[in-house]
Image (cartoon, rainbow, N blue to C red; front, side, top):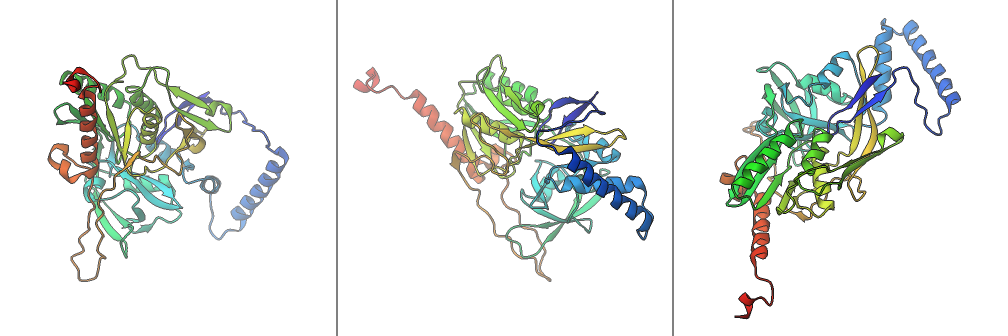
Length: 421
């Protein structure tokens, strides 16, 4: 028996029998074997007649990659090297750019650059389309291949060609790789009693780090909270559940998944002993908020526990299961979709904020020959909330809302002695 891991936004653990067969309702075994006969026929012809000699392993690997690519953008085949690479995705430390990518409409697309990383500093944005990596066209490139090309030795350089809405032509970004060490939780007191918590990614220690931050804030007199999930591309499902249960009652549903087979249908509920139930909250989201971020925002929104503010989130709501294979390779297979407590599917839709607050967009000037070639950067969420709060309309609106809530909480009830005087 071996374990299969779900990575990216979700991390589940299930057991599979490597020699077993999973049959679903409606499977036509005869038709399947008939098509396999055709497949082996093609393989034989290629091996015997193709202009160059190709090893059976190369042919099988290529066939598997093609099969999975035809399913959806998130399913893929991991050769043994890629499978080992995958295991560092949630470790919090690796050499690369600090960028989350996906395939959207068959185009390699930026989900979000992670704050403080080389990709973030270079000015990459959510929804940027990656046209080339070091001059190699990304059309038909698998996600795993793209990740492998962008990761590398710290100090080495990679050039990414980006197409962005509003640009007349793509631009090159030369980025120096760094050792990516992601501190997932950052805190700051915005004003007396209003605490700011930024979650950059959902890692194994995120919930514990958040708990420490909340305890510290509570001792300092925290009366309200801004939870910033902007440009947070996701991480571990378990972490998303643990973060959510800090703010909802014990036993409340956080998220559930539905797939074709029974062991993919799971429900995740809160089991917090001392949730922070009485703290007014605003959750910030944007187009770079994906997956685990959308789980948290959706659950808190469904239970009326927080006001969600910002712009529409990314819409990554499917579960990828990593299934190890006998030769050290693996399958990254979409096996389920996840839903908010009220049954909303996030996949392809995202979370719609209760209050939409757009960030002013700069119209990027076309890069013309003979021009300065400078890349125009749109405003990003504040690096230092205290210094840049006035430059961040979403954060400013969140603070204003929490101030209003606090004023209303302290207003005497109508008909009270204070108003009768």
